[in-house]
Length: 442
Image (cartoon, rainbow, N blue to C red; front, top):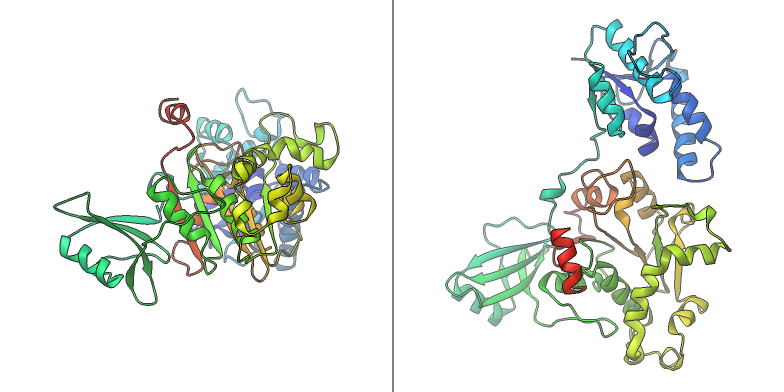
């Protein structure tokens, strides 16, 4: 049965292609949404880019029919622009506020149409007001995953002592009766003796579990738990071009990504020309434009967590044994890395439009990015580039995202069975006892 879907501005700003997410149904955009998009279109940030893209998509639909009556769109449905209806009763809501004008349009559409009408918004307050007015309201759920059931990247399997012994003797064993994803790991435990175990990596070509014998390290940093060990293996595997690390505060996701990136860039056998580290500018207070100083000085405020981790990695001459004596001799090793071009630190605002070949690219705090933004970033990767996305979906500053709808968790679920992608969920905080306490109880 055909339905009406009335879209709020934030849905289109979240995903410019949201117009095509409702199959053969009627997509209706209140004229107030068009006015808000017009205000955003001249902005040089991602809001402006998304607004311009949406307006171009709408303009292209004019060729296929009148927008007032409904124009055919490529999803199979129709697109209509709805004008104001001043007669609609909004009770005590202020009609001068744009959000309420949009709700008035949704209410008028619901009353005039015989079809079921839904108001789609990323704004929880707008959805609450819609329900109060008797309008069915929904979040934009096309890109939502269930974070509580997020893919971990590894399995724990109970086996016999004979199977573990055979694995150690032969180095690999057939994966019988268990479905594995690409680049997934496993912890095999003896059912009669839990202390007897084996750590394995799934090989999709041979459809077998390969024993992981040696523990890897990078820049003097070693894994502190099983999940970190899996993460190290993914980060140092050149065949895996996209790695996602999801974990709570203090789980080591940024630290180990940086350590492995430096090893792959300035180690004894460098695989990449440079390491690029980027973070989204999602402020908890003032935006970057209001901070004093030049672009580089402003970035220092946002990138301080990166510098903190680099300092930890490089202190005590951690880089000394990695094949770069010049780096070993310098007092300010981080400064050397930046000035030599080995390390580039950038805000994601400046990534758009670039082509990035031959680099180890880390995108930190990726939970603050939309699925569309993640797609844009990954599509920047040129030949020979590896991308690492790190983040904590429990710490999101973007007002229109949550643990289930952000680009990081969406990417994990969508790419979990791709040959060149791998993922690990880091569940244990290793920063300190105090940090662990805060994560668990606060």
